[in-house]
Length: 386
Image (tube, rainbow, N blue to C red; front, side, top):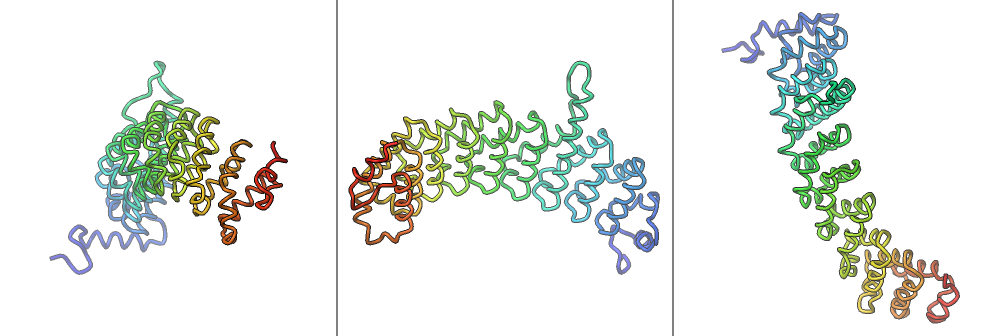
């Protein structure tokens, strides 16, 4: 059996050698560290010694440490200390060596992305892949063809089968967002395709909805257009979800008129029911602002329905939709809406301390300064037809 204090993997002599490295008053030379890289990478002090060697001894140290670690860099990526060494070695090796390193860990990139420490390692891979892509583009061959088998290509091909899962993971989503931010479009397309294929699940997730917003921030492309079409197809369902509603609102904020109008058209006939739901009411307010005049007329007709207006006025969410409608409506539409509300405002005077009714009255008086319940609707509105 092994002696006390040693492990089956580490003979006592190796332990003694490591202890002497730690006890040395000066930084040990690279030659003393080589042969112990795996063990040192899992230890705070040892990891620091290796990083110092990389900083001070240059490319020779980088190549030597890289080669010794090729069998276990996948472990180091997710280690609490080893991930710092992995990130440092990525920075110090050459572009060609980075391809070798990324290929050596390619089978572990998905699991590393899902790991608290590993996600930092993979994000560093993304950053350096992006820098390499810039270098390659600057020195592209005379035929204009970018080389294949780059570190970025290996990275994205390894992550692509699990892209949707990564989008909704608390650690993995940061890797995907870094890819969207840093890498050129042809290396990001797998994200758009995966999100479009699973848009219902991804958009309704707290992390996934953020990834989709980053997708929508990207320049126009066929993959982006396809994703937007998929969101529009499911917009009615998504706008009623705690996270999906943010995705639909983002489409209304940043997409083109055709996509915006498609979303706005999808809610015609459902304005009343969507206005009184916590999440879709936010989308309804934005639709009122972004829709065409023709669609806004249909919205206001629904909102002015005498059978529904009282519920909308009193509802904690619906009252905000009514206020927004008063702000964006034409004069004739606003008159019609106020006329529909007036009988209920009179009947509800006893509960006028209601916060929602106070807000509505404030909005009416701002739009029509001469309005008062006692004076009647014609008198209240007649002097402000502008």
